[in-house]
Length: 157
Image (cartoon, rainbow, N blue to C red; front, side, top):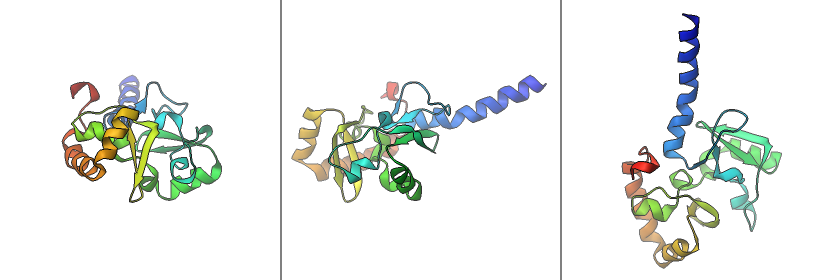
C-alpha cells in the first residue's frame, strides 16, 4: 500500500514537467531539481539587458511552471522572480515563425527579436530573415495559431 502511495506521489510530481514539455521548448534531460531546462540554459533576462545572450549558471536557478531557468547573476534571477512572464520568450520559447506555420521548432537565442517588450526566438538565420520581411503578420499569425498547438506534442505537428 505504501508503495502505491509513493508511486502516485511520484507521478503527480512528474506531471508538471510533462505538461511543461508540451508548452515550453525544453532541453532533453533534467536539471538537478528534476525539471527540464528552459532556453537551453541561457539567461532570459540577458536577452533584455545585453547585446548578446548570456549563458546562465545553475547556482542561480528558478523553477517556473515546471521548467528550470538559469541566470547569470543573482540580480538577473531577482528580476525574473519579480515578473517571470515579462522575461520569458513568447510561445514557450519555440520559434515564432514555426508557430506561425503551425509547427514547434527549436528557438535559438542567437536569432531573437524584442517587439513591444516581448521576446521572440527563431530557429535559424534564414527563418529570422523571413520573419523580418513582415514582422507584424508573423507575430499576429503566431498568436492566432498558438492556442491550437500549445498543448500538442512536438512530434504530433
